[in-house]
Amino acid sequence: MSKRAYNFNAGPAALPLAVLERAQAEFVDFKGTGMSIMEMSHRGKVYEEVHNEAASRLLNLLGNPGGYKVLFLQGGATTQFAMLPMNLLTEGKKAGYVKTGSWANKAIKEAKLIGETFVAASSEEDKYMSIPDLGNLVLPENTAYLHVTSNETIEGTQFQSFPDTGSVPLVADMSSDILCRPFDLTQFGLIYAGAQKNLGPSGVTVVIAREELLQNSPAHLPSYFRYDTHAENNSLYNTPPSFGIYMVNEVLKWIEEQGALEGIEAKNREKANLLYQAIDNSGGFYRGAAKASDRSLMNVTFRLTSEELEKQFIKQSEQEGFVGLKGHRSVGGLRASIYNAVPYDSVKALVDFMGEFQKANG
Ligand code: PMP
Image (cartoon, rainbow, N blue to C red; front, side, top):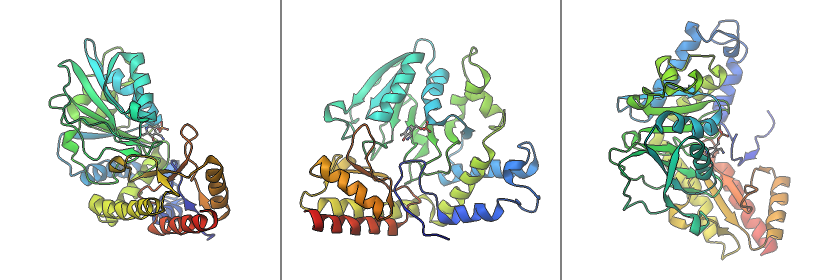
């Protein structure tokens, strides 16, 4: 096999090599069926076992507190930006949003098309380089839900703890940090995530919600856009993204093998510390973009002293086999996405490269 790239892509992103190899071994003949998992009916026993296993593995990794259901959907987190208010932002209610950056803003934009929204807190004044303090949050009684973006993929900020919303359901877009660390599922009414960062390939979207939030979709909604349709049909109302769900199941097995969420968090902290320390100890040559206390474990955003130097860094890094270090086009700078599957050795190689680059250009 040719050498694996130092893959820092923001999503789709690196997958565990062990998972890719397992999928490769089973690709043409899944468990002696004489066909790929992609070639069989989603109504058959063989597929259904994989499907149910993926859902229960996911709940188990989150401590399976009871009363929650997993849905496997399509359309990415982007579809959830709309589907969430379509189902939960009902007549007479308002939806609260915490405005933390690019993805929160996209979620707000879609919700506004469906109903009334309000901004419960914002870090816009800080150019979204921090997470607003939610310690004194007071929500109006008719709040349908409070929506947070647990990790802003573009800006590189992450919630370190979540607000207590009392009887108002807390909803989180966890697309870019789901399963990067343990969290208390019972704090949330609903969470959703596109799979293509920490869960598997693109094409699968996961929704995990308290069962009662999946029961009362407004009557006028078309079938696919109703949470109750998918909840009542075990995410098999229509043809699910079966290969993607199989891959999610394999990634979840891999996470179990890493010591579940505690084990994964320890590894993620080790990687993030290594990289942030390299930035902080560079004497100002590299500068972290986000406020230190709100920095993301997953997307490390940083700057150099000029855009010229940043361009040079990206070009040279690509020549050395590093992929995906250019910051998102909307904010510029540099970004290393170090999701669960990015090996420590890739981060170590990057830190070494950063040292060499500074020596040559500092
Ligand atoms: N939310 C966040 C936090 C994201 O990072 C992304 C994708 N980068 C999205 C939503 C959109 O996801 P999708 O492309 O799956 O619709």
